[in-house]
Image 1 (tube, rainbow, N blue to C red):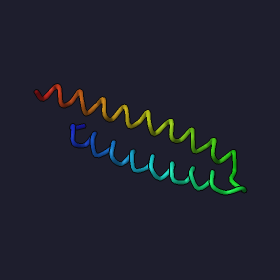
Image 2 (image 1 turned 135 degrees about the vertical axis):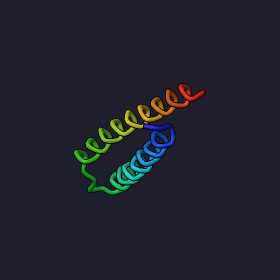
Image 3 (image 1 turned 120 degrees about the vertical axis):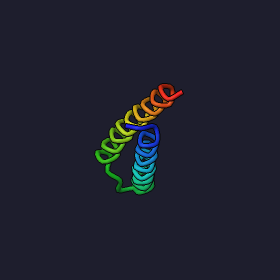
Image 4 (image 1 turned 45 degrees about the vertical axis):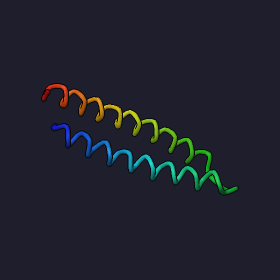
Length: 67
C-alpha cells in the first residue's frame, strides 16, 4: 500500500469516526437514547481510532522508506 493510499484510507476512517460521533451525540440528546447503542458506538469509535492509527503509522513507514 502506498503512502497516498494509507492516507486516503485514514481520511475515510476519520469520516466514519465523525459519523459515529454524530450518532452518539444524537443519542445523548434524547431522553429515550439507548445506553446499549451508546456502548456499541463507543466500541466502534475505539476500533476506528485504532484503524486510523494503523493507517497513519503505515503511511509514515512508507514515507520514511521513500526518503
